[in-house]
Length: 81
Image 1 (tube, rainbow, N blue to C red):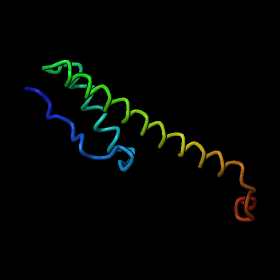
Image 2: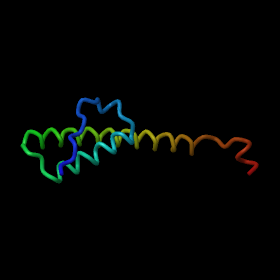
Image 3: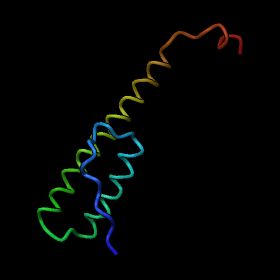
Image 4: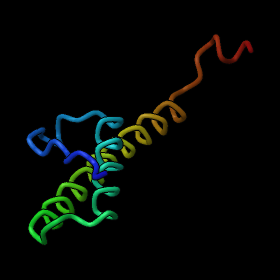
């Protein structure tokens, strides 16, 4: 049984982290099973690269937000704890 092909019509830039991650998992599984043609393998690889970049983009954004929150001055409520 082969995995269903990824929906390559969806623009990667519009995907949430979870959507990109889940599709990337499907793409990797498909590549591991071996696509029927070289052209399909290349298309899957390119899609996977774009999905991995999107996931990294989300993770870097989350890290920036965490770093900003950590470096923000403590509020009065936090000091009382």
